[in-house]
Image (cartoon, rainbow over all chains, first blue to last red; front, side, top):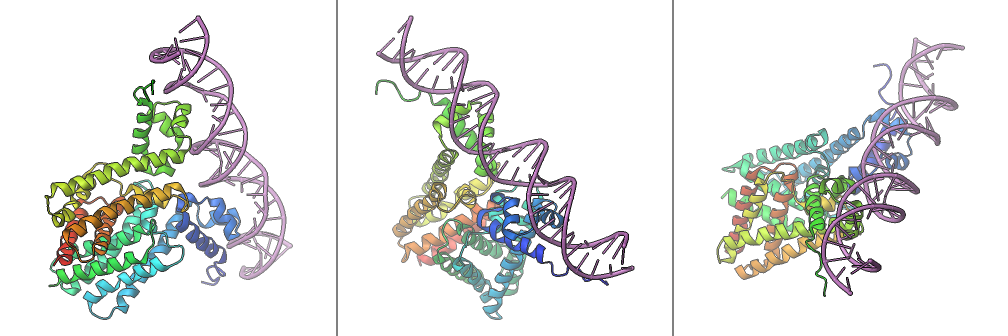
Length: 192
Length: 192
DNA sequence: GAGATGGTAGACGGAGCTGTCTGTAGAATC
DNA sequence: GATTCTACAGACAGCTCCGTCTACCATCTC
């Protein structure tokens, strides 16, 4: 290609960065397009060129969250060592990290799903995220030698969801610690 | 008082019943006051007489959910027998019941908290609900003889939250079953 | 120079939102 | 009969929201 794609993508990036911050803090429905425009210092036409519908921006926001959160989850698992059974517990360090982060406001997917019509693309994307994460945990559980990897994955993602979702009420890091201990108990019981 | 309070409270009840249904399905922010008025067959002035602000209606909605959910939780625990350790597991039958219910849409408190400004009365009410429930579970854990009732209660309410909150994405009753099994494992481990 | 590209600035329409207000009507109470 | 209470019906103001549109500008390429 002769002309390189976007010179810097600076406008698009500013929009996404601003949307990420505002959508996470107040929920997509709680933030008007005009606010995103004002805070990102971009023209309205520019925003609508990159994201023809507000939902397109919401989807891009969810993709960004997915990258960040799923990435943190895998990194935490990796940091726990080579043993899958340790990784299943270690991934909960990502939850602890999230709880401690300033402006922590729970699970972006559950929060967004709660306000999205059931049939729409936005809701579907939130479900897709949870499915992908659970599949990854299931594979880890299989590698660890769990008799019923599906069940163990369900149990652990349930804990993750509970810890994350509850963050919208109370971001106490003690929650993450309780979740981690539960994970240890459940993993030990499943691999006995 | 000579004049009995409300002759039947029928208008107020219709408003509350309608708000309960619509708020739970779409979130308070997703339902306009006009819609509540139209669907409950009530005059606008009547609604604003009973609930001067929309937030007052939201608070009444949360109270209603609290009664229903906390009631179901205690009933499920009671049905599990007299032993506190069985009650700690049995309360998860309430989660299974919720999952199977038509129009199940996750945890009303988490969903509402996600869209409510952090400092407000609505957000505070959601936190209060979770606190009350956890206190009740803590007392149950203490009666069961847990070494660390606070921790066990955290762990179990985490499971409850995860199961409930995840319902906005996927109301599969298999979730409730996984939560129940986790609860059994955690309770057994804590009371060993 | 002509045109394409990507950006800024902001008006505008049509819709929906909350909350107020005026006016009417039935029923109970004094 | 007069008053009070409760409810119905609906117009209205003021705001926000989404998305479209016109106009202008800078840069780069042909």
